Image 1: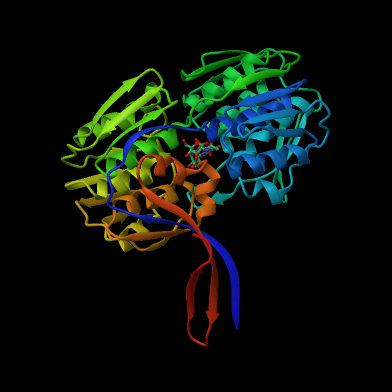
Image 2 (image 1 turned 180 degrees about the vertical axis):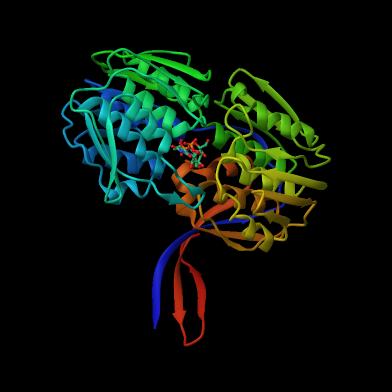
Length: 447
Ligand code: EPU
């Protein structure tokens, strides 16, 4: 018996140094909560510089399912009207595709006094707990319970300000509780809040719409409740993780790459780590550059909340370290299962040992990477395989392109502009079932 299906893969021919300048798209992790925040606004919201990626499309569908109007204008502008929302239950079919959709909980609770949103459970990166979100909602006066896989939060008489100290600076909980607190009576203070630039961008968006917030970017954020948020036009920040991916693409090919449209202050941890490896880094007004021709060694990495080294760059950094002389240790402190992609790097010739007990990887280099067929299991795992493919001899074919498209707008085009040989390729995959084995054959149909 055979099952045929159309699959799109990314094909790369490695071994070319990348050179040149490229402009990065808008931030995924800022756009998604800002879209959720549009649910709080009484008037049209125009979001500019939104990346055209599938995560944004899923969020659009989710907002529409809640009764909002969403319209794409050109390729990177969204117009959202949420004047008439009334639906408080988010459909599981959409939420399960996107962890960030949990951000609508705070917005619905704040605007309508009730939210029913499927619990995120786990994902390929590990557990996605919600205790800090729940702690925040309860402190604001909501009744919170789990019901058949949904988190139900209710505050029929409205929310009130509170002093909330998080045990960990969760990005999601900080955003969600901030969204709920915008309409709470009185002042809310979030302590040990996340300081990520995307949290700051959300606060700046809310303020542009009439919210009263101070302290964003520090570990203490204060939100003074208001009665109404109005219509607003807002431009999202550049995507620092996509920018970091492009800089690491330059580094892994020992090239010279400049990324425009990103704030240098968002990249301190990455740039210090690269400099320890012998990469020369330069910065200017909204641009960052790397010259990796003098790369001499690896370095140790510890992921941490901002301004520490971002967990979202950990897989791509590990791919780069695999090509650097010496031993590097990469310790992951944010997610408990973010090394699954390492198995694919091993198939390309990497020398990496994952220590499950310490959630760390010991990377020995320089590896002589060789192209291979590999599969992406999540957005950043896919980006790490792209980088490894750029550095490898011969051809790498990456399946699971749909994960890369969740977070990167035309990644292959940005890389091609820098001189990479990379293209999308669609083919019929025939899964031939025999008594003892499955054989996969790809027949290319499009170049
Ligand atoms: N956590 C708890 N309790 C909570 C909330 C979180 O224990 O109530 C734990 C989580 O289980 C996890 C850790 O804290 O182990 C980090 O969670 P956090 O809430 O900080 O992250 P998030 O909001 O779920 C966002 C980004 C992730 C990024 C992390 C960390 C979005 C849409 N997602 O996730 O981005 O890795 O912050 O910076 O903003 C990606 O873009 O590929 C991605 C995974």
